[in-house]
Every structure is written in structure tokens, then in C-alpha cells.
Image (cartoon, rainbow, N blue to C red; front, side, top):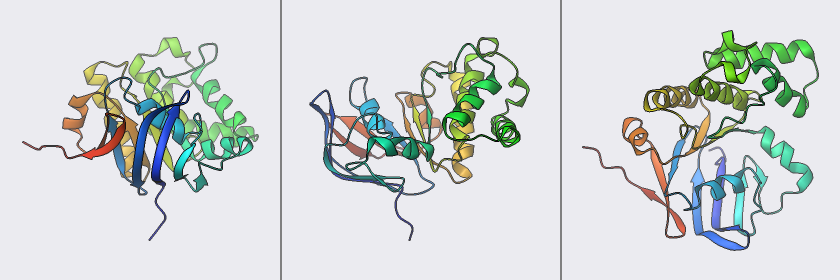
Length: 227
């Protein structure tokens, strides 16, 4: 039996010395698709930030993609992040360079150096998300939904074990949200673990999966009612 990709025991998550979520016990196995839901300010983003080491794990035990979050050293954070892909609500594409060069920037920042290998990889991930024809466009020349597809492609560059998607459909209209969701589900069906924070309950109904809720300072599994 393989190790869980994420394991948290008796974890309390702090933001600015305030406990945001307490007593979290959670295991996520390879290939799972997990939703994290909850109101704005309920701790979803703090939970995600703890996973990608933007917030330090101060209390409890936690391992994520084989890294101990409690003892993680500053110098190891880039290596942890290389094993995960992150998709944000606001795309975070650099506006002053083409789609291709946005992805090139990430590869160079994560240690790639061979030009031909980088070009092949960029074409491969853009192809996966149906955006191969946009490589030479600037971010402002493509729609919001297309920008999010490119952001998903960027998250796939280092062939991560896990994709963390923080409100990936938050800035998109319902139809585009469904398209981005279908893309994420497809990536999940190909074996990637996905942990997605969202407050879009329509998507949960359309694409049901294991759901955890941040509420009243803790995180617990909710069972979706099926009609």
C-alpha cells in the first residue's frame, strides 16, 4: 500500500498567530479528488497555504508529497513546490510576456536549462489543456477561461504529484467554470491527485467527489446528498 500523498494528525493551522483551523486529521491518497468548501474567511486558503509552505505548520504532524511540513527547512520549500502544481483564482500570468514565455519562466525558475526540452514540455502541457495555438499570444489576448487553462498547463509543467487548485473557477462564468472543471477531472482521471478549494456549490453537484468543509474552526468530511 503506497503512502498517502497527504497526512495530517492533530494539526492546528495558524494565520498571524491566530488559530484558524484546529484538530485536523486527514489522509489523502494518490489519485483522489478532494473538495475543500466553506465560507470566505473560514480557513480554506490558510489550509492550502500550509500545504505549499506559505504558512508554517506549527502544531500537529503533517507530511505532504513525502516532505515533513513541521520540520521543513526554507531551502527545501522549492523542492516541495516542484512536486505540486498550484492553480490560483486570479490566474497569476505575467502580463508582459507571451503564454510560451510565462511557462518558460516557470521552467527556468525550477531548474530546467535545455531549450529544446523546455519547448517540448511547454508544447506538451499546452496541448493537454487545448491551448497549443495560444503559445505566442499575450495573456490579455485570451479569455479568462483560456487564461485559467494556461494556468492549469503551468501547474502541470513539472509533472507534479498533486495539483492544489484554490478557487480556480472563482473569476469565471458558469459555462467556463464547467469547462475548467472538466479539464481538472480529466487530469485527475489520468492519475493526478487534486485538492480544490471552492465555494461554487453548483460544481459540487455537477461533479460530486469527496468533500471537506471548513466551518467553526475545524475541517470535517461532509456527505453530499444525492437526489
